Length: 501
Image 1 (cartoon, rainbow, N blue to C red):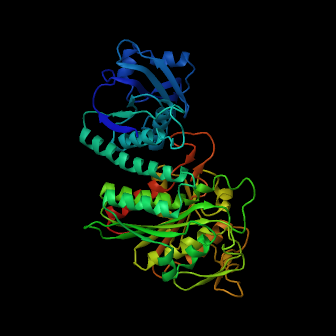
Image 2: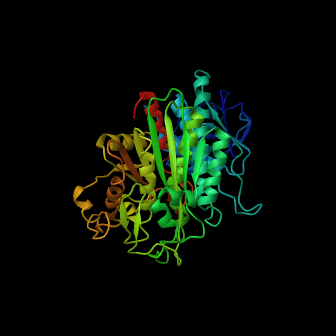
Image 3: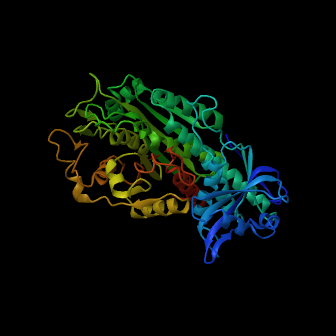
């Protein structure tokens, strides 16, 4: 795992394999970003000329290596692009992405120093977090020598003034980044190794490590409690379902948040089998549960003055002689009945059980996170998640919070007219499918039916950004991304600061 630290040493005097500086597109060619002053002096003020010769443009995602001159103790300088030059300071997301590009480019190095803009604690945190996330690599199944190791250590260079705040910012970045990388590991783990039972065991181990209360309901407890959604989805698998509660409490907390995560450790579609070409990445269908788990652990590590309970609804959706069939009726936790018209609309079934159970503890807010619908990907693309809620203020708050931490989201409606298609079942209270058009919104309306009266609830559909199938960019790797973790953590921080949700 990549180590993070902060230093107030001069960039010129720090011993490292690489020294990272930022460059941007200026009105008259490339411009050096703050933090590169000492490096430029070592180049006798001609660093931009050297970079121009090598074809550097300052574009986002660009990385150009330059051998170090005699005045530097690093082996080489890596110039990373920040995009358009900014006189008033660079956006935090630009710093995260540039640091991420640098860390990924420097895979195999033992130590790298990041001399990027770090005048404020927020900038220090952005650089540290971007670097840690960019350094991520999942090598569990690769043999020795098959791929470079992540950069061993990243040192964030910060001004001497405010060094205490800089150190705290790096520690905060480490807590969030390490938990995001834990979520990425879970998403990337092969489904023959990660099933509901093993996921629950991982949560129990983390609970013991961090002092969290973890409760696990196995298939017998679920049957006794009447969790028909979880049991119905898990019926076809040799790996039975689990409902895991991970609870963090703070003695000074004035508010309680419940985060609910969809944890389908593999989704074949069940009897409504997915077509060829749609199964290969379905190990990622537990990304919502991974995000919730990571967010609760991060809240504990940060010591936030808010109570946060995570509910992981874990099941494997497989076809077999015991699998739930289209046409079956499930009696959900809490008593509602659901006619299953499509067994591939299973995420809403496990979430419904967990939402009802979470509501019994009377939290101030419930937020569920799920790779729920392909319709949301069609609507918003691969990098943006949808936000729905029974409270417009909560929906807008989560959208704003996501933007603050660099996650792309968009507020979505819950049109009342789309509810009708789900309530037209002639034999049950609801059907798990409604109108075909607006499928992502229909799924949100289904979940809303299971929210207790008086509780504010929001739904994050992360089906697009949860699993990245293309080439890495910024600090985002190929594979699991840990989408929504930062949004949940920032919302918990905001709740703790305000003393209310």
